[in-house]
Length: 165
Length: 165
DNA sequence: AGGCTGGATAACGCAAGCGTTAGTTACAAT
DNA sequence: ATTGTAACTAACGCTTGCGTTATCCAGCCT
Image (tube, rainbow over all chains, first blue to last red; front, side, top):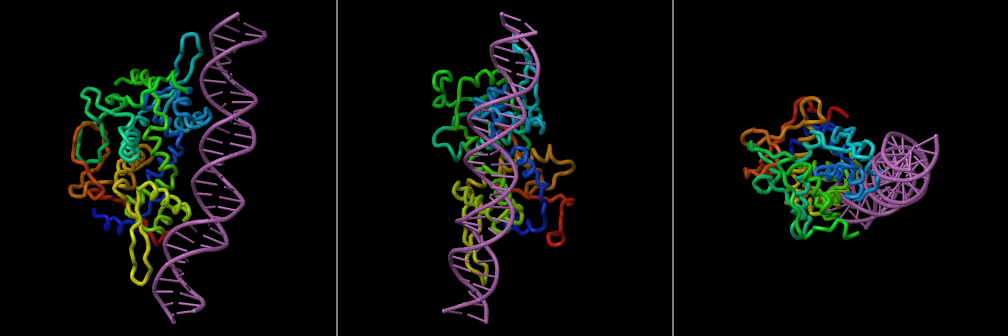
């Protein structure tokens, strides 16, 4: 459909707050919420790790997790460190893992337009090493799930986690 | 890469504010900004149309457009209605159109998890009518651009734009 | 020229989210 | 039992963005 045609049609309808995009943005309302989801994809599960790795305050993380639990995007899972009490860790639900295209497409755009050199992370297919991309297409094609993706760190971004403040 | 392995690795690096996702979220910081982008994809170009169709205030739209112009996502284009003065309309730049996967993946997730019945809009390939989807894959495949996509309205959502308040 | 119209923005009070600080809870250790 | 500790969470001032109102500005119209 040509752009001008789409423009003409746009007057015929109004979906108001029925728009899926608007509804999703109500859930992922704040930056902190989204960064928690990002960390989930990176493998973070525990409260304090979210706090330090996101660089947000504990209450902000607490609020974000509460929202994400209510939305069914993360779910608490009990774990027990030997010699410690039982704790919750937070894992993406199936709905949460389905946010992968949202997450990756944001990264992909940022890598293209907001990074000067090579981006800090690359996402490649686990077996083959082929780069994973988000594609908009009508063509059926084998899709990668979270577990098929290997995250490679650009060496320029490596840090000694203990070494630097 | 298995999840546990990713988790272990996550301690080795810290990209801080270098993360593309974080940077993008600084640009698309507010819901209004994102809804303006949505309307651009739907074909809206003029200031007042953004205001009425988004349901936001004029200053909020003004601020959002200023941010998007600064980020190079939309660009002003002069137009002239006969008998009126020259005005700006706003069109997605190439960088803006590259937000298509972000936009579509949000819609796709919302359609799956936040809609009860059929979603209000369907996105299909213009020529064939095949449904357009966002796919995460390493497989090279012909991709659709904005102009290849036809937006179909679910009849249940049709409104007489003049008829109802 | 001077009024008028309509697009766009500045000014300001309000509401929502964030970070700091302080508190609560549930267990282990003693 | 009592103390200690680690994981969260409530309470509160502050910053930021939103909407309402008022203003500006450019050009058509008479």
